[in-house]
Image: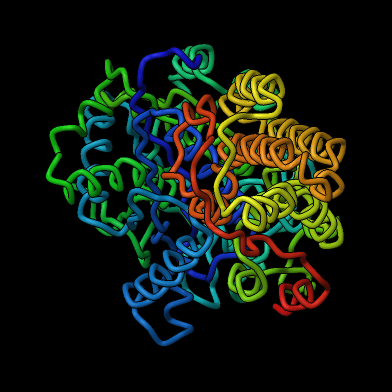
Length: 549
């Protein structure tokens, strides 16, 4: 999209957090990345709906609830309250946050399954399955661990490998062990339902050719396409917490069938709440001009970029316009792990600091690659102090103090350097393009270069020296007004990343919530409020509180 394009209708989703535990910073990474892009799209005037939901089905939910002496429904309700509270505190601007354990999701899952069945894409097969004789149950994928059959990585779950992203059947794991009993499971036969993915290789390839997928992700997906695609097991045996498959006894939809359908269900629920259900097909009809984008982690791209698009297309729903994939979050160079004590919960972070510090740090690291993102706590402290305090907010505190003390809180009628202000306006087009392409780290770099240039301008003019001579009052007035105009442009540019801090900034400058076109409007001959501290330095006490979990 260019700055002159027509308004677009966009539906955006983040991957669904699993409803068996509180959120950690890995979940927050993805939602921050999505939210920044959503806020940017709203800032430039597009119509955007941002949906998500808790992923509320599967054996782990059932077993966790049993461990806590709760029903699965009670557990997912408790986690829903926890998750929505945390997302709100991180200023994640979901238009709707729902649950996959919902009426909308059950109806849509059944509708899509029956459409696939009518097309001859569902097949019954007798399969070998891992069975825990101690627990007397078939083992879901997440309750088996072993050696990846593709790359040989140890300690991998029974559905996909975190090292190489390969997917497989749990029965293919080498040296499988039940996570529930720490015993070797036996093999038993059971009849399951399969989605005939192997017939749809050309259709998947066509979707990849016409959709936005990062080049490195596309290469990996094409590798899988060049191998023999296997039919996908979409059923699970009782006992299981989920939706029953219509027409079958004691068979349930595998969580990975109804989880992504949760995006549609959350959107439908949002429209219901607003009495606009008729708009559902305007988004999800195969011929719709609306755009649909999913933000996901690299461990689940197989499901989102191979299974889900052809499930949708064969059930007569619109396929996504793009899938944007990110890497994992590490802490101080190591994989986050509760057992290793290398872990930060979302709540622990919020006990220490406002969300915008983390939003900025993640933005400064995120681009179109799928490499892991490292949260180095020392780098986190230094980067925020250097960029947000020394460069960004310093512009306002230095110049606003002169406006308040010597000019009754009113900006000058004229700018000292219209040329510099125009240069900043022109630079905004480049940053616009970087946001659109989701090159957040490059956008943050360019914004901070503008902050450097604005500080250099202010330092070169030396208003603290000039103010000593009354003859220089008018020049000091216009220099500080110019500096605050540069600061205003930077604030609009960075507002998708720092919604909490910039809200305070626009209040201080007596400005409305921004739109992108505000970059082009000079602010002169108007009152501003007295400047008060908006962004403070991060110290070791903040870091220690953050790390307490």
